[in-house]
Length: 108
Image (cartoon, rainbow, N blue to C red; front, side, top):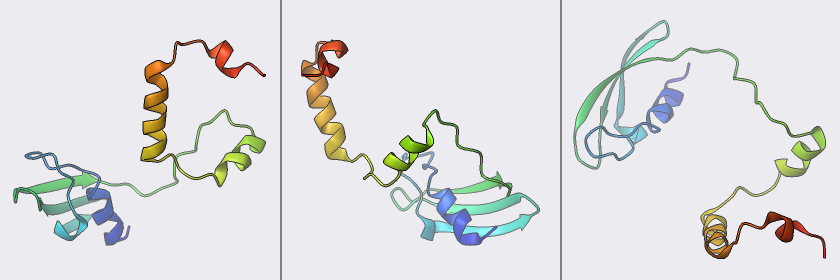
């Protein structure tokens, strides 16, 4: 497994002291044996340091479980990801939504 992947993986972990995510540049790989990796990390936000022992197994990616049909998968595959503005728009909509989905989706 590539060392850069391990560094990126550690950036998904948050500092136990301040809660900020670790940065890849602050990860030092100390060693590896089979699936066991030993790392040293330091938090750029608060300066705390930690040792990480992680079991990281290589293998097939888990199969995606979905109830999408092939047609739906193709339709949605290339759409833009949901962004912060989309979430804000939905929040504003839901503040005044009365819960009547029949009316909401009724064809005019």
